[in-house]
Image (cartoon, rainbow over all chains, first blue to last red; front, side):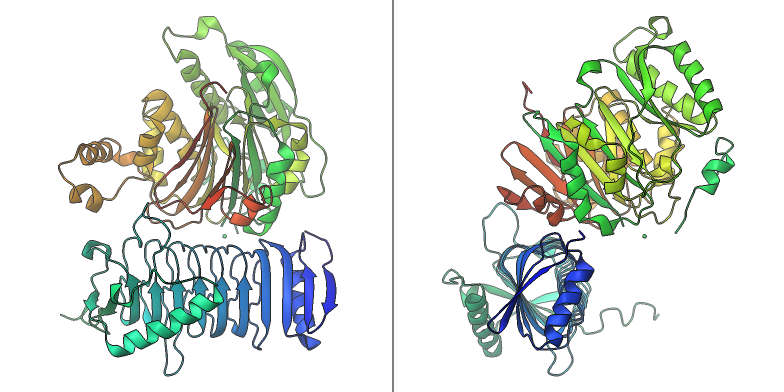
Length: 256
Length: 370
């Protein structure tokens, strides 16, 4: 991976061929393009380059053609990333604001410790998605997953909103075990039924309220537009709403 | 940490500084795949390793000697080589022996003497019965590793070979001239040692006879597994946890005759919670029996492994998927890797790509006639 990236400037947009380019050089080039005022960047031929858009703190749109490497958009604060393929592990690690849209599936540990912004994944996600998510006042992170999810979805979740649509075949459960284990803040909406045995001991099922319906309508319209997918099969009343019944589940753990 | 068989040469060359990269490709039709392919795949996940270990195993690489055990051996010096060759000649009918061809590479420094020998055990040395030759070869490998100073057998199967070194995987592949070889199964590894030294013997794959393992993670049950294996004559000499996994597959499948799927259910056993939730089924009874019988063969801790053997390839995760593993298929080819990009590099448009569930093996087997 030692090739210099080929940069083509187009109208209000730069296209960069990332084929065989090492991640450091690729990310350096993105920063240079931004410094020159470019706010719409397309990366072609991406395959496995880590840390794309990490720590970027400005409004910029980056379109990624190919499979980006781990920690896509980590610590990101503002950019919009569109991945026209699958993504790997650690997408949106500790991101603060902005949006990441993944057309295909994504790997493990998506949105770890996320504190703001949105992550939309069209397909399945792996294990430990949305763990340690948190919110503060107007900073409310949102993850929407179109497909299915593995174990530990929303584990130790402290805030924010997660929506799981569970589409794409009935060959495996729509979510794995330990759903919301240790959860003490935020809300998880699951389209379909989840057995009690799959849930952590800290979550309970609650009835949908008007505010939930309003949130779901808005976010699903946005998801549908970004992913160019028709959500006619999604029924508002089929969502399970899961919330922790205590905001301090371990408050008495060491107190006798 | 070091016993008497580890000379200053080994100790001086051990680095103790953390994650690993895995990739494997297998043709279910048994079609030959160039070693260049697995090097290209490993190149993408270069940063999962840190240059303190890289290696590969190829199956089907020695068709001219396919019925002979191919012993790949590293020697610290000529004295070890002479002592080992004496032991080999005494115990085996050797048909060929040569230095393993290498291409000097700036990324690979200070190699030991690297030789390979092809042969079978001497008839008079063997006890009667099926599997006697395999059992004899396991004992011979253990004997060499534990008694010949500075000498380690790193490959002992038939029509297959392990190639490993201290260095980044792609450099190791070029060093051993892997593009000159064709195999129907390749597995590769880039090491990032965390708890145990980075040295030539500690690079992956780990092998015994037909079984090779590349691993990302750490086996916290190592002590239990090691003591269990010792009861069956396996000696762990390579100073790192993954070694037990190769021996466990040999024990469970070759010696105890477990089917592949069940061997995986011993190593990544279902949780008691799952077994007890459907108490009365035959399946639950089987898993309960396996957990009780093979408690000491359960592998705990985070792991993703790719296991190679002459009839195929297996990808397996620990029971809560603490390390990444992705699989894909395209026509007759099965791919397993730590990262999707490593697969897409050598297979841009797979028919299907998926993330295997925790503890659920991905099993690729050669077609019956291949």
